[in-house]
Image 1 (cartoon, rainbow, N blue to C red):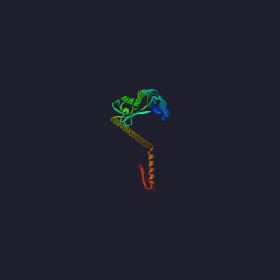
Image 2 (cartoon, rainbow, N blue to C red; image 1 turned 60 degrees about the horizontal axis):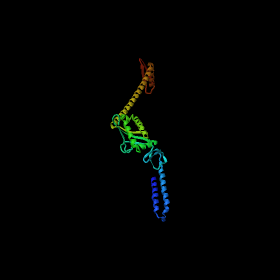
Image 3 (cartoon, rainbow, N blue to C red; image 1 turned 90 degrees about the vertical axis):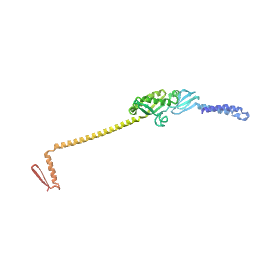
Length: 305
């Protein structure tokens, strides 16, 4: 827009003024010569002013290029006064993500873009990965000069895929899926962080979102988990049976102790007394008339009347 105004102003000065010179003096158009010059100059000045001002939005920095050559220094967010001949490349310095996924339309590329790697035990494992990163504002001129604005395709994607493959061969497939997943992710992060830093990129995090094992291995793991769950269930049942057996043993021991205590206090005289007492209660009952009881050769006759 600014350059259009400058060109328009130049055309007004060149063609407009020259045309008015060819017009007869008595036509009255000669009086417009001053106005035409003023309009042309105003258009040129306005175009230069517009070309000298550039606005950088929040979260972006501007990198200056003069005749295709990247200039040192950056433009911060806000309104900046620049050389009208300079071109500005705006780069996003906020957190960005690059996702490689097997799910259609989920990643940066269409279709299946998951990373397929070979593990230490020779199995092929498929991984979905997300890289979180941001550009170092002060390093953006260097990045633009050495790599260009397509740094995702030249640095982020190939470096992430390479580091994943280089480190996957150190682990078995099942270990990557379970116990060694965090260690695997930490190794990749450290190596990528070092390489990104050299290029002016700050690595914030990497997220291994999914690890898909071969179906045969997956079935084996599921069977193992099921067997472990069955073993835990059986262990619980056995523990419960042991507790029940212990309860019954304690109960039987209590009964035995009680009986032993009772037996130790019972004498023949006490038993005979309790027997006579019970028979006497029976004799005084309405349903009992005569009870004959005895011990040895000495019978005793009790009559309820």
